[in-house]
Image 1 (cartoon, rainbow, N blue to C red):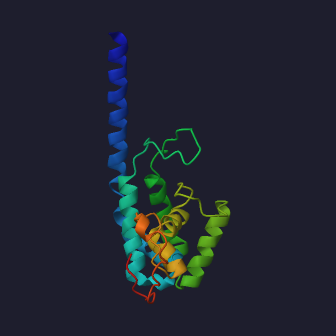
Image 2 (image 1 turned 90 degrees about the horizontal axis):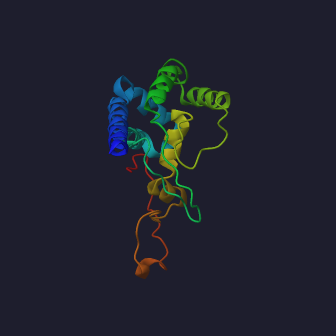
Image 3 (image 1 turned 90 degrees about the vertical axis):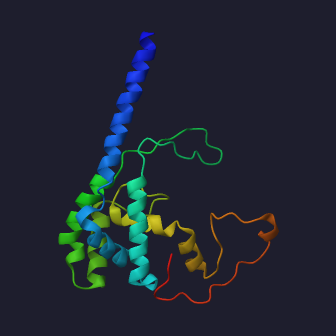
Length: 188
């Protein structure tokens, strides 16, 4: 009986901690929405246009707000180890947006902003984009978030491939339809 009470108390405490974490991420990006959109316009492909990069920034906001620390992650093919998501990077992102607002994003030209962000990556020892956003830096996580999407894959290949989208067996042998033209206002 005591063991059951202990386990119930532990679950209640973990549940309370989880609700606190969710409450913290709900304020992301807070006063930094314009900085996040400026960051997206700086680090994402210009061919998306400002409307496209703003759309990606808002999708990233939703991803951060819906992030659940401790959630079980996919194990991957051939792997038996169960992994869990770490704590939400929202608080770190807010600090980094503060720094970027007064540093890299304060530059007047996009080239100067990109140069400053490259320096930030070098200082943070970020050499490659991770397979999934890992909390190392908001700029690299935003880029990873976008470049892992089906839409980014389609634009890269100029074809409607639909990566990670379900297709029927009947359609699996068909060559993907070529994209007509990637415009400056491409919507995701």
